[in-house]
Image 1 (cartoon, helix red, strand yellow):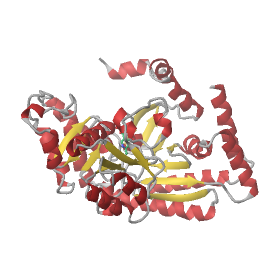
Image 2: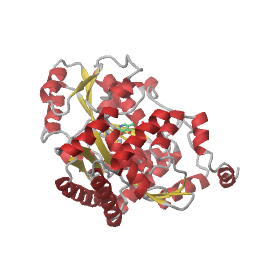
Image 3: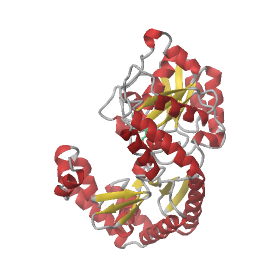
Length: 456
Ligand SMILES: Cc1ncc(COP(=O)(O)O)c(C=O)c1O
């Protein structure tokens, strides 16, 4: 197959083809918000289209490209693995690359975590965490937090605190209970019953970039220990440098029983995930030779993912990407907080490292409030598009609206430079400033979007 020729022959067909064969609703959304670009190349924090336009990617494939896209060292490691004709997925064997990657992961995790189960995705890592917790504790229930996102397969969906994802798929796992983030009394009420296997937590919630009040995580961990509930930290998005440390839980000094990882673990080149857990849990799940594959999969430990994982961890460490995430994140937060003082539509700026949420809120001035109300009567989330759409169309920056209120989320690759930060802040301020003129062209974007959505 000549891939280059194949892609060239079909250039320009991608949206029609995808709509006809994969997901026409997604294509409608892309066309409505002007995200129907034809990217042809990607490098680091940038995407390029056929005309050679460069786009700054502050979405990172939902947090996959911590090391930037197509990192040469990770690509080279994968190419070398292919070149060596390695014996991949023999299944009845103990592959060396899996052991090497597991050892690297365990070295950066708390000492109580000493086993790794490899998966193909974040949701599959959380499925493993749910099964392992239930098996190890002989309890059936799982607690999670409202707004939580742990994936969309049945088990993970059962602990997903976003009703819109569950709609149409219930009933899910029985006994799973969502607790308001920050409500220790509600947590203790559930755990006191001593039938909760695990509490599953994102250190920073991806949907909306929510953080708990000070002291909450430490107290929640203490309640878990008191009632024999395992603490599962979902680091699928926050892990591997994203928040300026290896893992998000390090900011609160937590000692989880289980840690799930995915997304950036292979540098975005091969699907991968990992459920990291204690030997005690292992002994209860894999309790005999008959049960040696009682929870297993076909592709989880595949050589290419393991090799990419080893190279990705090298890159993260040797290029100091966690430190860069902390420094660039601070520049972004400082710049955005300065804008918050000036622009009344910005209600809150929050986040750690390169995981940032900008929440917009109902303005005080009458004129702007009229625009806000108008947009909100059409759709509650529409205002966010007034930011995200011009960032893309006028400045070629990819961002996303994330969460229930109007929240624009920034999730850039950890390789961004001070210059990228300056470019983003300047573009963002131009867009936000335009939204403070009502009536005005910025608000017309909303009307245009609503009209296009209705015709689509
Ligand atoms: C915190 C968290 N957990 C789990 C998942 C699910 O991962 P995947 O999409 O690889 O199944 C995601 C995906 O966005 C996530 O952000």
